[in-house]
Image 1 (cartoon, rainbow, N blue to C red):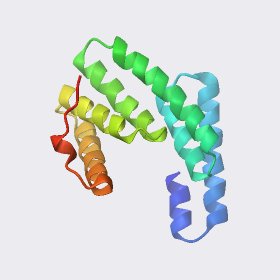
Image 2 (cartoon, rainbow, N blue to C red):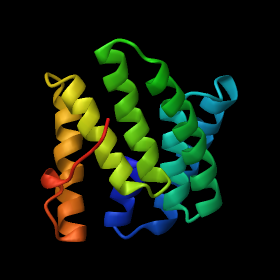
Image 3 (cartoon, rainbow, N blue to C red):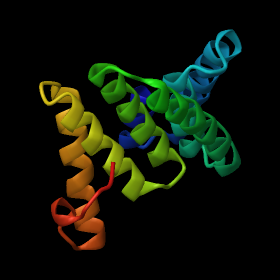
Image 4 (cartoon, rainbow, N blue to C red):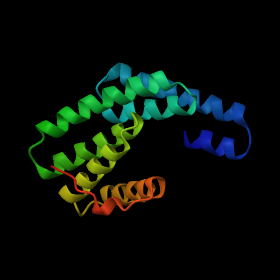
Length: 144
């Protein structure tokens, strides 16, 4: 997808589309080996979003959401819970559950405050939400 993004910037949409479909092919191969792989489902949802296939975005995003939610609920250790909260947030983004995505990014960051990845994801999402909704999301209450 990054290569496709670069071709879009170079105003070469045909090449961008070619690389998007390559990304989809790679994702489908990964899913055929492990249909419950959350990052692969999310990657496919993102790729399908870029080729304007909303039904596929929702299909793969929903599947990732269900799997990540189950893992999150089953996790006992903080680091495991943080990992699955992060991927649950990523899945939420794909199925347009933005406030819920922020909630799980925040949870991942709180459970593993030493993770730069979780911290960055939380603050980036919060910043986007504040710009979009024009309110301070740091002040919102989230129930655990």
